Length: 122
Image (cartoon, rainbow, N blue to C red; front, side):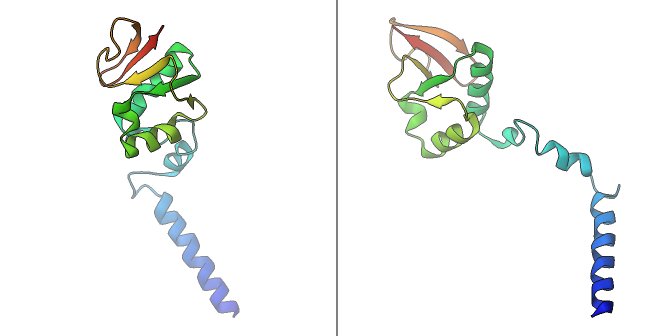
């Protein structure tokens, strides 16, 4: 039993050196970055990334999603998860869409990015 414990410890030690050594393109810093705020966001849809940037820029805490974003189940789920603690509310005056000014002249554009627009309706 003593030999098995020693052998297991040796395997773990050697594996650790291999994983965190210079032979890999990533190291310990890679794992540290994974716990920082916003980590992993680069794999999400660009629309979700842009929404977060706009919310941070404008200081808004609540928003709605237009049908073009909310009807896409994948987009909706990723948006809810990524934008937490910002709140998605139904039928709000401030909303995101991928279409330019789809509510007519009663809405003002607050901000836009390459794929999403943020509007406020009166």
